[in-house]
Image (cartoon, rainbow, N blue to C red):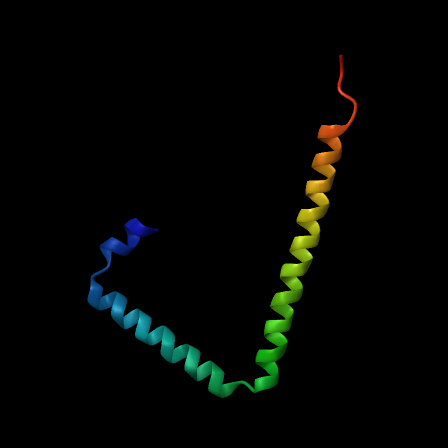
Length: 71
């Protein structure tokens, strides 16, 4: 990815950053505050769900490693 960035002139990257900021500001103005609260809550719940899945996989892996070993 860093290699791809080097191919873009700084002026183009600057315009893309400015356009991105404008889009964020437009979206924020168009959508009600409740949307953003729910979006952030949904993101948090998604991350917590991923954490639960990772914890379960890690526990399963630990049980498999600490189980009886063949002689």
